[in-house]
Image 1 (cartoon, rainbow, N blue to C red):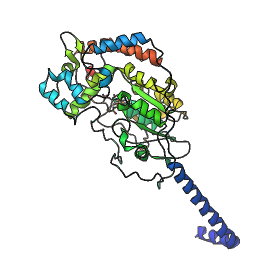
Image 2 (image 1 turned 60 degrees about the vertical axis):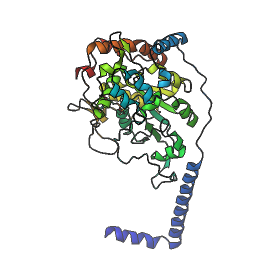
Image 3 (image 1 turned 180 degrees about the vertical axis):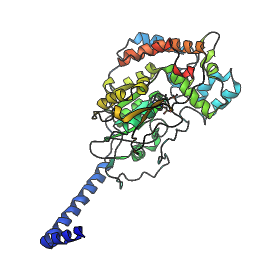
Image 4 (image 1 turned 90 degrees about the vertical axis):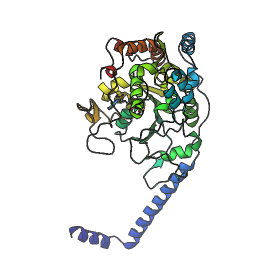
Length: 407
Ligand SMILES: Nc1ncnc2c1ncn2[C@@H]1O[C@H](COP(=O)(O)OS(=O)(=O)O)[C@@H](OP(=O)(O)O)[C@H]1O
C-alpha cells in the first residue's frame, strides 16, 4: 500500500511527457547495445599466422640424444604423438594378441575415447552454428586461455577452482576442438563458450591438446597471444592414473607391468604406449615452444595442487592477470575423499568434491617396475625442468614410493 501511494504521488508530480521521453531513451539505448553486441560477435576472429621464432633454450644435442634413445625403441614417438591405435598396438601385439586386436580397432584410441562427461548441459552435437547473440548477458568469445594438459594431471580440479573466480567463465566439458573437432570451424567452437561480460576471461580445458601434433599451430593461428596452462604431475604416477582410468572402462586389459615393457627381462620400456608417451613432457613441450614463448605458458604442479591448492591458484590467477580472489578460504580438505574440495563451487552454495573418476584408488604396481620407470623418465624430466626453469622434484619420489603404488 505504502509503495502504491508513493508511486502515484511520484507520477502525479512528474509530467507525463518527461516520463515518456525517459522511457523512450531507455529503449533506444537498449536497442543500440543489443545491435552492437551482435555486430561484435560477427567479426572474424582469426589473427595472424606468424610463427613464434624462438627455439628451445636447451642444448639441442642433448635433445637429439634423448630422442635417439627413444627411437632406438620401436615406432616413432613423434608420429605417435597423435597416434592411431594401430601404432599403439604394435608394441603390445606379441604380448597379448587379444588385447592388441582390441587396441587396433579404429574406434578405440586415446583421441577417440569418449570425453568424460562430468558436467551438465554440455553437448558436442552440431547446434547448427547458432548466432552468437544469446539471451544470456554478454557475448560468446573464443577462449583467451586454455588448459592444454596434461591428461590425469589435475586439470579438472584446476578448472573447477578457476570457475569460482567471478572473472572466469569456462565450458563445463572438454570441447576437443583442436584435436577431434577442428573441421567444425571456429564458429562452432565459439558457440560452445559461455557468454562473457567485459573483463571476464573465456576458458576451456582439453588435456589431450598437449600431445596433439597439430594443436600448437592451430591454437596459434586462432590467437597468438593466448595463455596456455599445463598441469604436470610425476609422469610415473600420471601413467598409473591413466592406466587406472582405462582399466575402469576395460577390466580385461593386461596388467600395467605387461603393457609398460617391450621386453621386461631386458628392461625395455614401451614408449609407444600412450600412458607412458604422454609423460615425456619435454618432447611435447618442444612443439609448443616453436609457436609460443614461455611467457605465455604457465606450469602448475599437479602435486602441489593437492597439498596447497590456494598457493597454486594464486600463481595461476597472477598469470591470467586476475585479482587473487580464489584463496585458501575456498578450499577445505575432505578426509573421506582424501583431496581438497571446494567450499562454494561456481554453480552452487554447498561444498563439493570432484566426482568418483577423480582421485581413484590405483592398482598396486610392482616396485621394480616403478623404479625402472623413474629411471626412464629421469633424463626427460631434467630436460623439462631446464626448459621450464622449474624443478618439480619428481626425483624425490624415487626414494619414497608414489601414492599410486601404495593404494
Ligand atoms: N581436488 C582434487 N580432487 C580430486 N582429484 C584431484 C584433485 N586435485 C588433483 N586431483 C588429481 O586429478 C587427477 C585427475 O586429473 P585430470 O582432472 O586432469 O584428469 S582428466 O585428464 O581430465 O581425466 C586425479 O588423478 P587420480 O588420483 O589418479 O584419479 C587426482 O589425483
